[in-house]
Length: 220
Ligand code: TYD
Image (tube, rainbow, N blue to C red; front, top):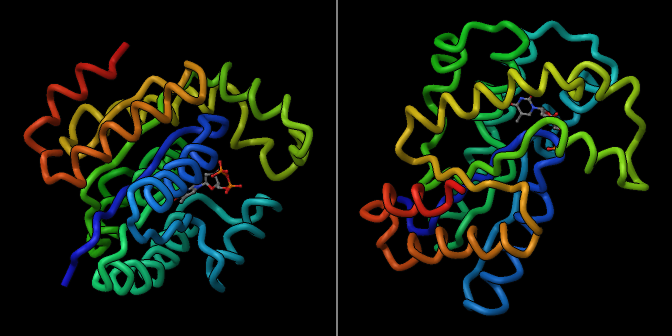
């Protein structure tokens, strides 16, 4: 049985999810004294590795890719449930909403993506960091460490593909009351402040009742 808070962070490539997840992790641990399990999808497990390889080579069709992401998630859920039951808060960088957004943008039927993910544990809150593809792509290409805009990312990171991915996220945010949208096209520290505010309310058990209010607040 679940005890910790299950937080999912979503966004297009270059939205700053990784950085924001790490900062949130540090804040929760060091300043709030919580224990946290920071994790991501694709995972570091066997199926996650297979997925990274498939993404790198672009050699798996969108439908089987969606199935592999769902399979990776089932394994991941075992680990997540265990951490939650130990009272740890879980921060997960990407989850099934990425499948909806990305595999949906690759033409896979979203209803079917929902079906193959129907056993996935539902998080307490999904924080969607919203940036335009222009901003996301700029951030990625200005990073010295970026693996180059060719190959692996070629199809995923093209502007119009990311536009569709973003629309798929916005659609989910509209339909799912667990979503909080934060405009991430603002300085990193302001995004983090917004994130901490949302998570802080959930930790106090006040998240849901303030959902509408907070969502309005962060829509700027
Ligand atoms: P990664 O290199 O970890 O990118 P990022 O730092 O942006 O998270 O690769 C993750 C890629 O996998 C990313 O481009 C999105 C994609 N993805 C899907 O297409 N479907 C999914 O269900 C998940 C979890 C990720």
